[in-house]
Length: 181
Image (cartoon, rainbow, N blue to C red; front, side):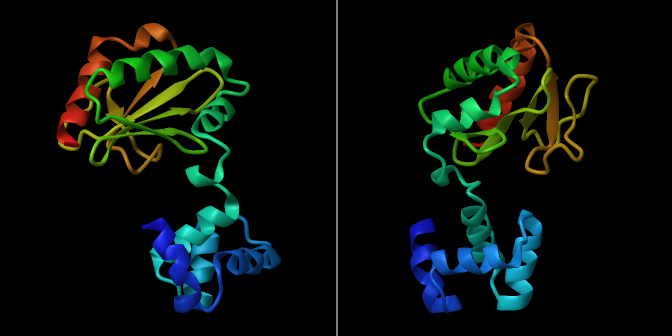
C-alpha cells in the first residue's frame, strides 16, 4: 500500500515524494504534527498522504532505517541495562505463536498479530514501558491506564528489572494477543 501511495503522490499532489521532502526541508518544519498540518492546510493532502510524507521526510518510518536490528540497537543506546528485559519479553511473546510480528520503530517496538496488541518502549534510562491493548480491562496498581504514554494502547506496565517479566505480565500480553487475532 505504501508503494502505491508513493507512486500516486505526483498524480494526486503534483510532486514526487523526493520533491515533497525538498518542499518540507525549505519550510524548516520538523515536528510530525506540524508537517501534517502544513501539508493538509497548505497543499490539500489527506491525512494518510500527509502522514506518509512526514514519516519519510523525517526518516522515522521503519523502512527508512538500515535494519530492524539497528532500530532496536539505537533505542537502547545509553539504556543498555534495559536491553535484557526487552530480550526476555520478546522471547516470551514469540511463544504465543508464529504469527507474532515484532516491528521496530524509531522509539519503540510494536508487537502485532492481525493488529497491534502491545508495544515495548525504553522510556527512560531506568524504565522500560510495556503498552498493552486491553480495552475493557480494569486498571490495577501495576496495570495502569496508558494515559498520555501512548494513545495506541489502553494500558501500561512499567518495568525496571528482568524479574518484572513475570507470569502476570505475560498473561496480560497473551490476552491482548488473543484479542488481536
